Image (tube, rainbow, N blue to C red; front, side, top):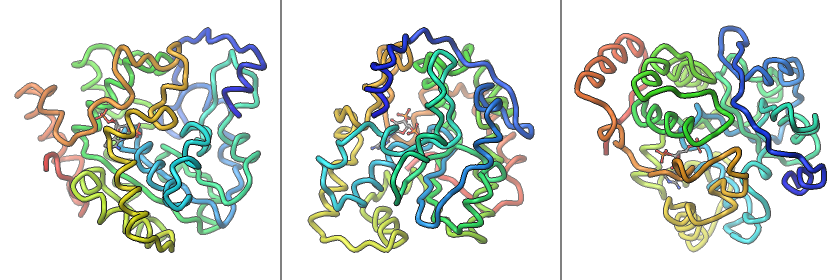
Length: 307
Ligand code: A3P
């Protein structure tokens, strides 16, 4: 397993924040850009399931829901390893202080099928084999304002993400798309268009929050799984925010504080819809709304910023 391997290799967590470069205009860590050819050449298999999101849209939550479905609600099986060990993050390349065996691609290649994989890539950067093999993909989107707030706090606590700067500075960076994985606006719109052409289930964080039973049933249908009501109840229970927050295999506390410093801001931070109201000034909100209107003009995609 990943953590054991790290210990065996006596990896020192001498971490520094990642440098950023670009692939086709999309900011990614320099490490990811350097090994981009390997990511692009990744060989998906027809029974791979891909969970795709813009960062902080509810990826981990969806991963837990999917894993519980795949394991028929058996919590112990889902606790076999941390989220990031269960589901390879295909474009991820770890820090230079770690040996080369830790790219998401290598992790995926070492995993038996059927595999569930994770990505934050915008649709145009998804390795072509996923389309060629007609893989099932679950995409989860979260409203831009809460996504921004969550991303800001994640940059603060994640010691290998680029410096977020002040809240005001990060706010501006997010609007211009100069953050890792690029523009939220292009991401959600690109995947929205793709869903009409490929096997993509497009879900919303707000919908799952509002009615997890209804949304988990959509996932069940998409995965062609049928579960007893009691199993579904169990999945709903164990994937609630408060329960997942206490689950070390789902709350990212197995990573060392040199990478994720939960004392700055926990990974499982608030898990609500509308926290942006505690962060946006009136002026920022007006500026955001005007810019949003322009960037989202002409799409049928709509979001709820509160429930
Ligand atoms: P907040 O920072 O707003 O709390 P990702 O997994 O894509 O990195 O997203 C992380 C965000 O999803 C965090 O948002 C986290 O708290 C939230 N989250 C994780 N599990 C959740 C759950 N079970 N219910 C609701 N939100 C959850």
